[in-house]
Length: 501
Ligand code: ADP
Image 1 (cartoon, helix red, strand yellow):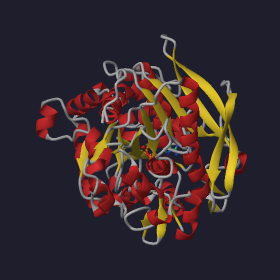
Image 2 (cartoon, protein in one colour):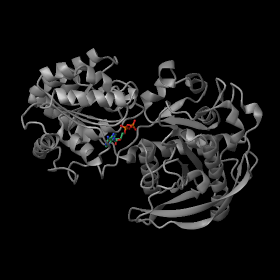
Image 3 (cartoon, protein in one colour):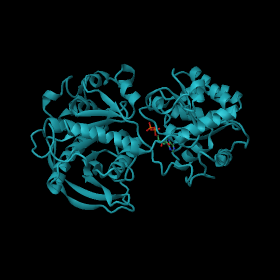
Image 4 (cartoon, helix red, strand yellow):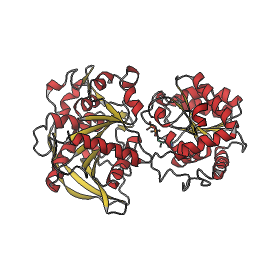
């Protein structure tokens, strides 16, 4: 249905279960925090809806109560309080309005999705509540501002039900039933799957609990619901958008995704180019730029010192990330003896699976002169590895977008990545031809095996020793623009297409 009013400045509502600067457990928070700001910079009106958790960072912010909403739950209606914060954006008086939904029985807990004993058992009820609250906030904003909302942008399973409600239970609501929805998938490995016996918590008609609806092999699958009912589905890289259509990448949802006749679009995430800037990064021993890389050598020496490794001019390989099977760091662990024989040093920073943590720990004990390991979350160390390492390895089995390789491109640290998802889309692999054209920004391998990884690292080491090509690869990577501006523009184009439908 075409709309008559001005479509140049859109009225965008975004909803996510976490967003910086308030609350973060992963990359979703980075996107949900950065994208609204970028959209506002482009002149759009943006409201971000998030749950008000106990750990919500309020320092330096000024949240104020703006009203209450009545939210339907399986146990009846409850009242939730809305608190608003305003984030100023740029100098033109633009801002992002943040609406935090406060309902303490669900969100006043230590942890967002999990406690010490694992996932909260009422997560379906909690996020069904949040998704209903999103609908009520839309109605609240609609009546307060008297300005139609152009688009509702949802993220991941925690908000997916909002798309279902808009097309089913809330379809007839005069002011909001017509709002278009975009659902972005950040990692199809996480779908919000719950026992079928909990379906009633979603407050949806029973006929939606079928294989053609939200049922997933007897369970409830919230992401599946979102994929079926959102007006458009996107994910965080073009290659991942294709991969999730196959049994290897779709985690059982490949058929549902492929059944969308309008396909799934892929838009690469941007990075925070202010915090991640080698010219100004205050975590570093020295700053540097594409045209003067001398500070990078200082960062390398400082990193060696920090890791207790000898200060010598050998290639230093960085590893940063969650130590889970997805990231493929077990492949790296397998080839450590061969790498040690090449005389390289390795800097590892990550937390995750106990077995892999133990393995890296014992490799450190075996090669104390060549391996530095920190099994913790350490923002400063992540910056110092990005700056001080010569190359960064990401052997991911799958990678929806990946941020670490984008930082390393910006820091002149050459990424060695598996050709998958966002890694395939953001790293131009070294080949004699791409190097000659000055386009190569890193190294890629296809097969998720230790042998392929080793062969590619050995090729990279060969190029490292041939300094001239190495510097041109570094500089090509440092030139690429991965700020949010470009991606935000692509989202706006999609919003406009949807809005005009
Ligand atoms: P994912 O979202 O799958 O974990 P990404 O590469 O998209 O992977 O984002 C990971 C982010 O988390 C990056 O900013 C990376 O620097 C950071 N990170 C991961 N592990 C650690 C750690 N142990 N210490 C500090 N930062 C980390």
